[in-house]
Structure formats: structure tokens, C-alpha cells
Length: 305
Image 1: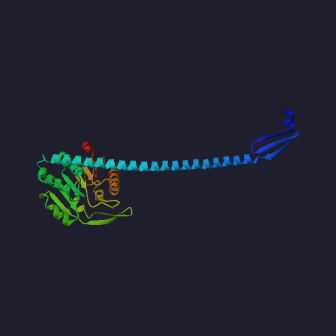
Image 2: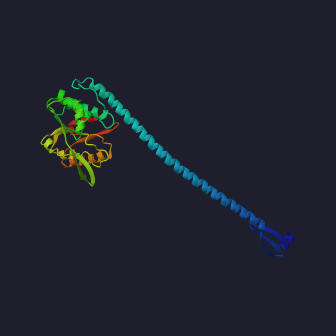
Image 3: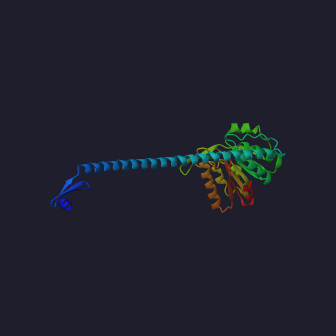
């Protein structure tokens, strides 16, 4: 048998067939094996492509899922924050309405904190300031719901207080005067708006306040006017009052402090205070709208309200 194998034998090697005849080896291509190999290679190629395609789709789906998840989480966070702010507004409204019932100096207890008007959170912190600190000189930019508080305070709680409220709209002034008490220490002043350019942006402010503010040093300045919407640096009259018109102990309230424009103005206020070496603290009160309260060190207890 072994002798026969040395004379003639056939062996398969990979894709070749080896024929040995009397010690002479003849190498022939094995068509069957070649077809099998080609078929196997084709299957592996297709499988690899399928594998890559599935992997790419899974990766894409994962990215899409992550993107969707991030968007969904962001929306949920915003929604929850909105609910939290609305709850805070309702909470402050309940406290405010409860407090004013026991304040004899608040004769008119009807307040309408809706739409563009001062919110309950604004009225609440203002009530605390008027009742606890009892400011002597108040300057108010923008006539509205807060004026119902400040005017009654000046009339019935602190007749020695000097209240100056500035607004540009004569029709609005006439409407609001019907709801406000009259007294010599309550001054509702009309001032037109003037346009000015700041850092290449058009803005508005009340015109010529120097003759009103003169040498008065205010311990409370309320900033809720003029209209600040869609302005890069709104409500900048306050900058002209620092430092000469600030009392040693003071409070500044800036409404709508969640808006970009008011944030820009707030930065300018901080810079002006810092450049004049005026020490101050600050906190933000967030509800349906946000108020920035800036205060001298004496009034730091306000942040706990």
C-alpha cells in the first residue's frame, strides 16, 4: 500500500490538489475547493458588512436616543423649574395677602399683580422693607402696583418719608392717581424718555432727572421702569445716582432681573458700586419673575425673607 502511495497519490491542500506519480508532484487547482473558499469569503464579507451596518445603526440610534434623552431631560428640568417658580409666586402671594390684612396703614388692599405689573414676590419683599426698615427717601422708577404700597406707606405709616415716583406715560399717571392717596410728601412726576447709545445699542431712560434727585440721598430705589423689554441696557438711570444719591444704608430693587437686558444693567450697577468702593450684598428672589435686591451690609437680614 505504501509502495502504491509512493507511485501514485492524490492529496487536497487548501485550494490545490497534489497528485504524485512516481515521485513527481503535480499541483492542480481544486475548483470545488476554490468555489467553497469563494463562497465562504463572500459570506464572511456580507456578514461583516451586515455587522458594520448593524453597529452603525445601533450607534446612530444610541446617539439619537442620547440626544432625545438630553432634550427631554432639559425640557423636564425647565418644566419643573417653572412649576417651582409658580409655586413660589403663589406662596408669596398667600403670605402677602395675609400680612396686609393686619397692616392698618394699608387702607387699599386691592392689588392686581398680573402680566407686566409687579408680581406678588416683588410686593412681598417691598412690604417687608417698608414695614421693617421704614425708609425715609424713596425713588421709584415706573408707576404701578408697587406705588400702591409706597404711597400708602408715605401717607399713613411714615409721613416724614419723601416719595418720588417717575413715569413717562401721562395717561397711565392719570389712571393710577385715582387709586393713590394724596399727600405733600408723595410726588408723581412725569418725565419723557430719551434715547441714547450704550456700547453700540439703542436704549431709553428718563430725561433730565438731576433737577429731581439733586442732593437727595435715597435709602430705597425701586427700578421697574421704563420698559426694559428688547433693550440691551435698560433702566440705566440708576447709574447716574451712584454714588452721590445713595444713602449710607440703602436698598436697590431691580425688577425683571431674569431678562438679558436687566442682567447687563445689573453688571453695570455692580461695576459702579465697586469702582466707588461701596460695600454691598445681593440676592435674587425668583418666582414668576425675578427681583435683584442689592443692599448695604446693615440690611443683609433681608436675604432670609
